[in-house]
Amino acid sequence: MRVELAPSTRGKPPPHAERRSSLLLELKRLLPRWTRTQRIRTAAAIPLQTVIVDDAHLPVYVRIAEKAKQLRQLGMSDRAIGRALGVSDKTVAKGLR
Image (tube, rainbow, N blue to C red):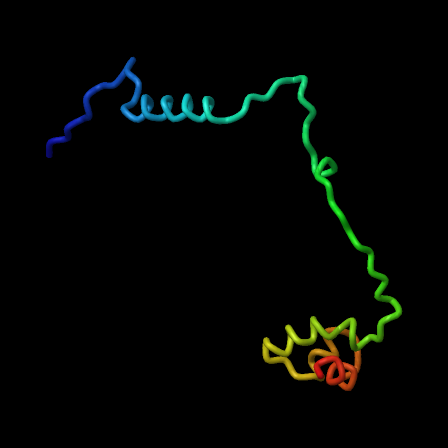
């Protein structure tokens, strides 16, 4: 049985190293530069508009309607949906109308 070894590459960079280094140089050129004087952007710096809706005054069947519809599409019965959401099966039926 004869085993051939690959030629020694000691001291030489692997063949893909040149390609990798050229890609890194290209990325450095394309990406914007960051300096220590720039502020670090966090999620708090992103402007966000929210509307707070108080749904405590809404009836239970209205609050569970969307989730009940999703569970119905999964093939669950009104009784099973009611158990999952903690309400009666009649409340589920009303929410699904």
